[in-house]
Amino acid sequence: MVDIHNRARRMDCAVQFLLRSKSILDENRKRILEFKQHCIASGLSVARQLYYLQRLTRIAEKLGKKRFEDCGRADIEALMEYFNTAKKRGTMWWAMIATADDKALRPEEWMTLTIGHIRFDEYGAVATVKSGKVGERRVRLVSSAPALEALTI
Image 1 (cartoon, one colour):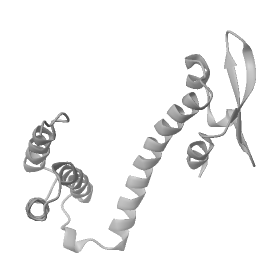
Image 2 (image 1 turned 90 degrees about the horizontal axis):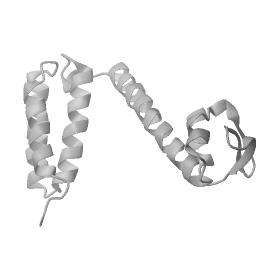
Image 3 (image 1 turned 120 degrees about the vertical axis):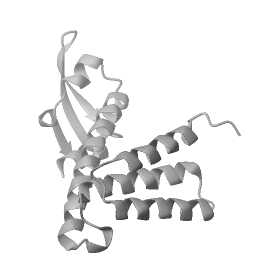
Image 4 (image 1 turned 90 degrees about the vertical axis):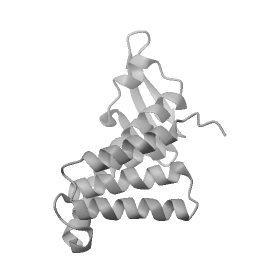
């Protein structure tokens, strides 16, 4: 099968990054590579292996010189806070794209839109958008409202 996503090369790059990273403890590096071998033996796809390898590498980097086995509740909570913040940044991009797509807003309208321009109600959300072409107008947002609401949580 043709690898149009070039996952084999991406896997090689991820392994090289793991091996070269100075911020990861050798014991954690060894554990990650053992887990990668376990994933191969279990028959997981290269995409799934790559996903696990990249996430474990990021976790090991955040732990610094602490072994996986020595992590306590405070370490796990700090990791959860870090990844939730990263997830929220991804949610922001998703909300922007969903909003632009929801009502076919002009680029000027959705690029200048802030969360303060949006009011939520029982039907979704209403955004006040500004454009040089038509001035200020109110737009009902339905399908993008859940993504926008996730930003305010």
